[in-house]
Image (cartoon, rainbow, N blue to C red; front, side):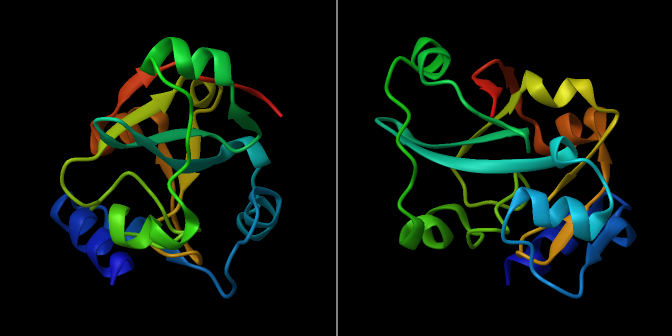
Length: 154
């Protein structure tokens, strides 16, 4: 259902036609990049972290990972991912399809500066086999995320 929620969200924005459902699910950043035909860094991966105040999503370039020191400096606590089995219930999208659109209420969204090296990125669109192509400016607009610097290259 989360793909349908994302489609509805982007239909309201006039962008539903930009969502692509691929023939296969993308289980890794590298596989997604191959399926789409882009660089791994252009895969805008969204990770869910549990915090004392609730859950946050961090969207980052696909070839980056969390920098624990920077994360702790930003959020004043250690990075702790939402358990895999709880992601769909908590966020509203299953693992592999997590994106910063049409999520459950009360979740804060953060966009990592690593995305700014690209003009166009490809976040998931609510399912492991879907993506939407967005400029970084569109990603910021439609996710309403706050910019942070909490990653480092893999």
